[in-house]
Length: 74
Image (cartoon, rainbow, N blue to C red; front, side, top):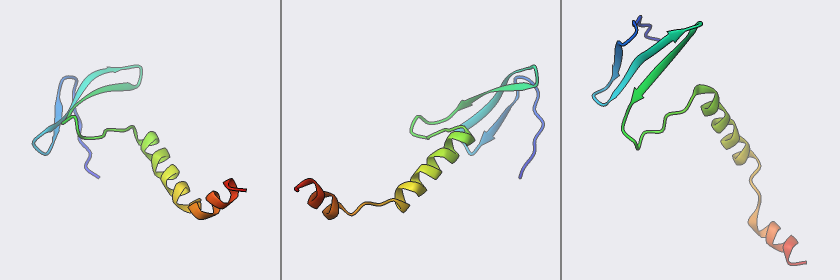
């Protein structure tokens, strides 16, 4: 893990087209701004973890479509 110290108004560049800027620091919180291409998905870590978990659950709970069709046709 790379650890960097930044002051208010300073930025970090990820590649050539993603900039993370420190916008505000108050009450033990840091507000950041992210400039990135619109086609790049940006999620908070806790939301990303939820999406991953839901995808795992969907794979593990796959339903056989023929079984569903047979049950619905009765």
